[in-house]
Image: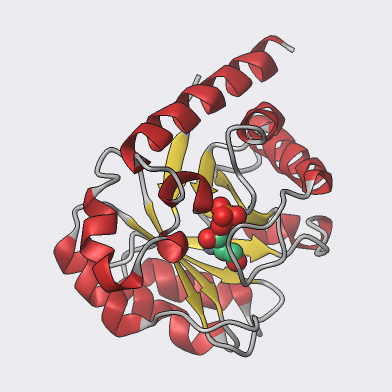
Length: 226
Ligand code: DX5
Ligand code: ZN
């Protein structure tokens, strides 16, 4: 069974101390970096200069989640800035395949993200061009929202395709992942779990990462036997 991967989202950390936020979860698998442009979502966060600085400040692979318009233009720059995985939204992209190829050519994994209401079926054929499928389990824009369980059917569909040999893909979930919800996501077939408030809202972010990983492992075991 693969090991679950935990990607703490620095959206819930103190933006004045991002290097400390990265250090505090040094045993996480990826560091999730939410890039928002105030157009694709009604919130504004950080961009390329901060990603470059974080890349210098931390050894954690940076998982950049672009919630921006015109990712075709901007996404490859995040790969050049040192991101390990660059995920953009299908709802915003003009040419997702071309953009995925540009991200990969710049040396990063390419990720495709779907908002909760966006169906997966129309994009299944595209997924061979991607390394990561990020299924949003809240409306993108803000941390601390409640998990939307209906998105788990997309997780199950994606997992079935991976299992049948059609795809090699990280299946990632983002939004409302807590001690109470991570198990059901793992059981449905997620292998990368973003958690913002559940990690940085905890007095001990490192312990929260380990606890979430243990709960995910237990959920994965249920699906293996189910
Ligand atoms: C929301 C972001 C998430 C956010 C998740 O648009 O994409 O990564 O940080 O926060 P929690 O885990 O608190 O729902
Ligand atoms: Zn995110």
